[in-house]
Image (cartoon, rainbow, N blue to C red; front, top):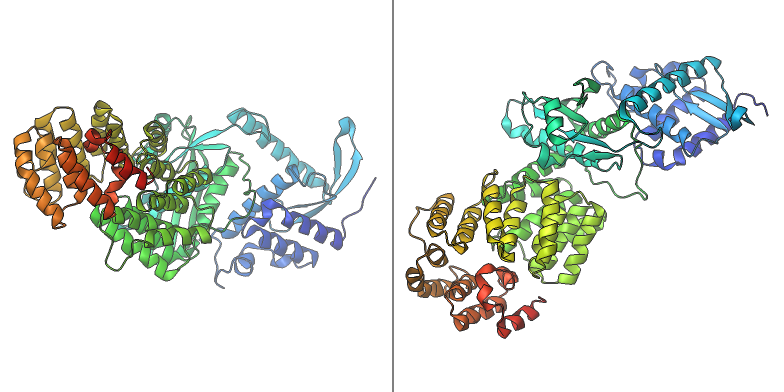
Length: 614
């Protein structure tokens, strides 16, 4: 059958079909942008479809908007063309009308489809502008052939492409602002990692490629990827300038490059646009989630900046870092109380502070759980919140079935979350002596984030607890080669050396731990003396440890460990029972702590463990 040009009613009906498609329901500004273009064109108001006008009317730029310094209209138009192309290649292929946006302008073209079968059963399209057939389809065919030649695979069935996002460089004079560039890097890794056609190198693998002298081709070879994303960030008061490019590892040439000079509040849109542009350059179809979920990201720049600062400080894994993280998370939540990632992050920091008996004054022990549950209520798809809840339910509440369910939910939501795998191992599996599962979960976490101090540290302890002292020593060494060394890391390294009979090296490690704590190194005391090979001194120290435990200057668990290592089972069990009755957090390790190994066949320990669900 032959057709005429579409009527306004046909075009509007097609517009509604397009906007109802999943690819446009979740496309942010693209849907209102397309509606504006179509309605203006239908009403004959094409004079207003130019960049300077669209920036003001559609993207809420100021009246003096200048496209040269802010390419928002061009960027969004490029995204819109790609999204329309994807739609008509897929679910809209049989639609009777098509909407296209030719390159070089903002006036849409409305096409009528002739459904008569052509030769070979093809569908013949009759377009309003015959020239469009050669002007659009021929270049598209040429681009498609180039892509197939470059990347391989079958059109419409893209191969998985390995990508690395190198740390974005901060061009600010103040190093204190580096957190913003780090946030840009992490958010891009997260966005690109959600595309099944891309295999994205973990942040921990790329963290070492920081600075001005990094060769992207060398980085790509070392990381085993075919393309890299690199860029820089500069903030000047309320303006943000982001440069980004996609580099072919084989040739070093740029496959795509863009500079964004925008208000600082547009950082979220910039992140989306970079990810979409990278996906488009690699011919990856950006698929929407199966069901809409609440946004993980705040629209408030002040809250976002505080969140990034908090996350940076929490990664330091130090008392000072945790204190600063708490301050910044609280700042973010003071600006936006329902900011789910900040709630989840504060829950995790508080949970660790609770474990170390260092909750800030006025913070109840129930606060970590309340924060995690509130984050989940706001955003049920936030993996970090479920991971935090799993940690709290495990080492905090000893509710192991519920803790495991929360931890597995976190992993299901984000299998690429090192934190989810690591907290599952440390807070759920290890206390239950499920060592093979715990070690496997730690290894998976470290495949994703090999440089994260906390995961390396707890993995070393898991190896020691499982009985593999040699592997534990090597893992502690690796941990100490990283940044963010905590005094406990040196002390635990000394413990592993002591169990291996390397007493002099153990004493040196204990001295380093003292120095990191700000104490003048003295002779090893208590358990440290025993691990340093001085049993007689440990026996002399034991009554002083008992007195300190009675006066709450040290934990009851510390007294239990010392007596257990000295072979005094009755006195060790007495202190263990006191520790469990008092609800000491470290009682969670009564079955896994290598210092309590001599008690593992004692029925009294089994009875205590049963009370804790272990």
